[in-house]
Length: 246
Image (tube, rainbow, N blue to C red):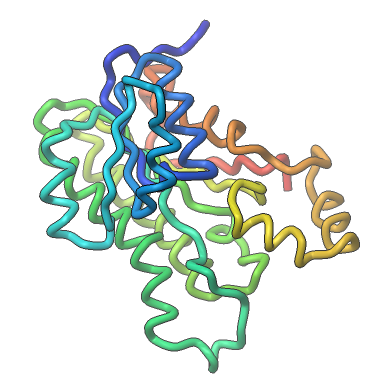
């Protein structure tokens, strides 16, 4: 049975590229009205090009005032917190990490998730329906493959926030769930990470995946569609690993 989202209002952060882009397209193809949010205006324009069901919002999700000025008025039925990443950083010893390096990763991965969820909370609770899906990472459940302490910590924080919000939103009929993707080549950063592994590292990574292949952005989008659907109406507070089997 095909899942449809006719006229559902979906807000997706990180919609300019990679996994967020794939999620936005998947919802639009199934009838949703999609609001793609990102700081990358050029990337957003590519996401929403030639699709009347999609709208772009250039927005810094770590800025509470900016979020509150835009997001509540959209009246989202579904929120997907996909914005994140390593902000151009690479693994370094902890003694070399500045406060700014640490904070910038937390701002987009965890604070942004909190502020966006806060912005949709009043309307979802009042309507007594809604879906929030957070895109964490396998790094939040184990370790960061690139050794970035802030990234592993922020992604683990998203998982904890998911569990807590599930209990807060549950009495209102709103579900809050999380997806922890495995390694997906989805944007320039992950392409650089893949190349840096070299042939031996790439082979080792694949050998540790039960299905012996990397995931795709569409693999992650499919899991999001399930959590957003009526089929997942009695599932909340869960973190689903979409990683090909570890």
